[in-house]
Amino acid sequence: MSPISPPVKAVLEARQDATRTKIDIALLGQNLDNQQETGDLINQMVQQAGELQKQLSSGHIDVRV
Image 1 (cartoon, one colour):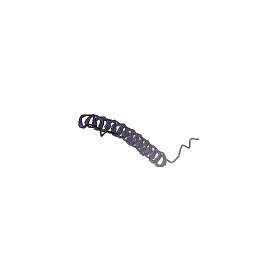
Image 2: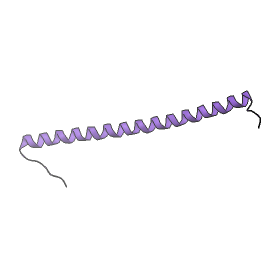
Image 3: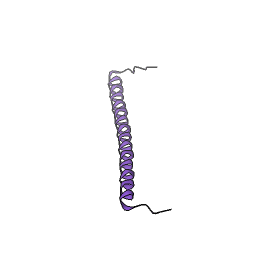
Image 4: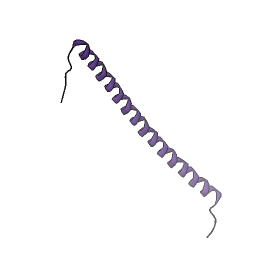
């Protein structure tokens, strides 16, 4: 088998780097989506805690099933 010529090797490495970059970007996008979802859930919990505080201060709790 003959060794890979330098120009071909450079092209293959560039393609490999581009593929790694695409994968990294996709993973970063997924991480960002997960962080956004977590933030939304935390905001929802804070709102619910605020509603509970209001209900407690008014003397009743609205229990939802």
